[in-house]
Every structure is written in structure tokens, then in C-alpha cells.
Length: 101
Picture (cartoon, rainbow, N blue to C red):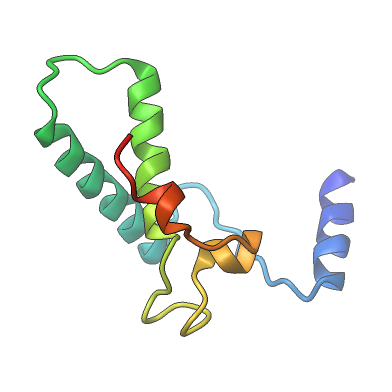
């Protein structure tokens, strides 16, 4: 019952949802996951730890997704606006986001 209410609300917003079944694959999503993993591995290779606390792993994932969404993509929804700006309305602030503390 709850699922049909969600579908009605989403259809009113003119949003198309592609529901996938178990064991079905979405190549675009899988490529995004691989990209995130590769960038996290690049960070891991620069660190001198042998073990990583859970919180550090979470922050690495957050950091990678933040920067991937901070800039407009060539094949994205908008040529100039980044996904972050489209969703949140926030822009990158050089003084806040790129300074070493």
C-alpha cells in the first residue's frame, strides 16, 4: 500500500524511476561505484596506516563523493552547474573547501 502512494507522489513530480530487480545490473551505477573505489584507493595509498578506523573510511567516501559532485560533468544534466549546486544550491568556496588546516 505504501509503495503505491510513493509512486503516485513521484509521478506527480514528473520523476521517472527505473526499478531494478534482484541480480539486475545498472552499468552507469556500477561505473560510479568503481570510480569512487578507485579514488578512495588513491587516498589509502598515500596514507601510512596499516588499519583504518571506520570513521576514516566513512570520511574518505564522503570526501570523494563531495569532490565528484562539486564540478559539472561533461555528460551531466547541466553543462555549467554541478550536481551539488543543482541539488543543494551551494557553490564551492575556495577559502572554505581548499585550504589546508
